[in-house]
Image (cartoon, rainbow, N blue to C red):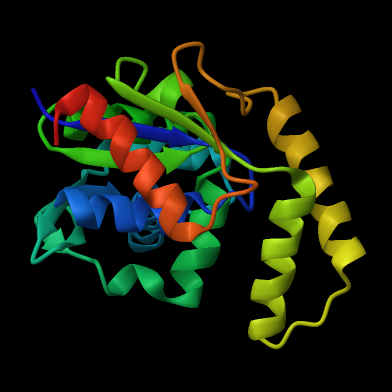
Length: 223
């Protein structure tokens, strides 16, 4: 049975970066689900379908075959048999992905694809509804979080390093608003799965957080 790890949590919890390191240490795929929505966006552009037209996108999404392969230690994303890993990073495709990812039909199709891939491949997926929707039966489910103040502090520090001097108070306010939206959205709101392990990293550094997840995985899979 493939190794399946689901990590959920609020914005600013460090899910993606920590998941990258955990997957690398385990030698498994960290699935970039955003790349899948980018591929749908690319497909719609090629089909001449307006990504903002929900009925049109929903009618054609069944024609889009998205797949992912783990090659040379990284994810390659395919549209049919075409490797589109580099093509999906353009600004035009990014905008298309933002539109198509809002439509329920697209989300259902991508969740089904993610579930199929997880049944065939060792992988870790992070997000906001992985343990509750995408990988309900994953043997390892982790809800990764930290206090809002600590998440805002980390985001504020990252912003400063990137040349963005937005005040900490503004960062905290935006983060709290995003939490409210994610936890109260109508479709698949952010919540901790009943069988998920709660990992609060408020007082853990990056490496300690990675090691904590690896210990949880080892307890289940012995690796």
